[in-house]
Image (cartoon, rainbow, N blue to C red; front, top):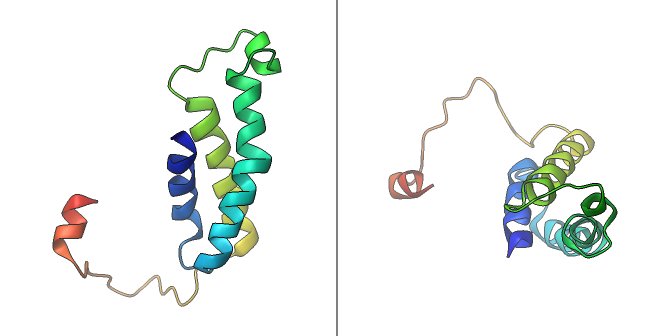
Length: 101
């Protein structure tokens, strides 16, 4: 369940910077190569972070920690958003979605 939330957090860093297909491939690979090992380190029996005495009941280390680092690295690697004008006035296009969001 937490891996879905992690993917959603990372999506905020890559919006308008990465194509959707590339994002899906990245999230699948990232969840297998990065998220799963860190989950084992923190939550699994014999995990080295768990053996250091770390207690992560709510997923802050695994979910927020590694997704923040991943999002920052992706944003720096991918560069600025495409066609992003800092001086343009951006208005919400769907008020109910803005309220839900």
